[in-house]
Length: 108
Image 1 (cartoon, rainbow, N blue to C red):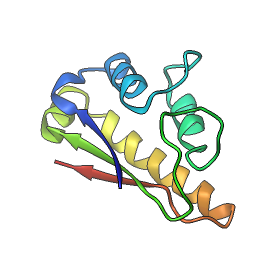
Image 2: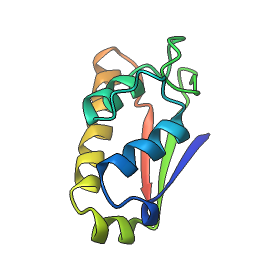
Image 3: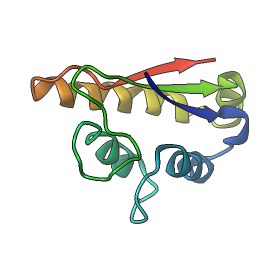
Image 4: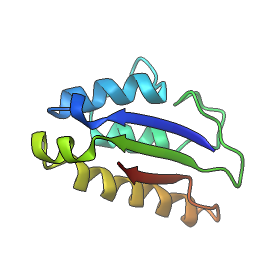
């Protein structure tokens, strides 16, 4: 299973979150550094669009691990709930197209 690990202790605000995501996921140079762009990029994990460094097969899942999730909750309490909502929204998009969910979120 493909895995991306984000360090919650190093994320104190939205710019830090997006900078870490841009590097970890391999988002393109034109990544917009907002959650709309985050959702758009991760909605193409099974296509050859170059929106991330990953290209998943039909049954594959990308595991997003948030290390030091408690630190992230303390430093930027609005990020985790938004992230959870966006992961759910992306998985619903995949299901709407008759595909299996593509993302799993684990907090450590």
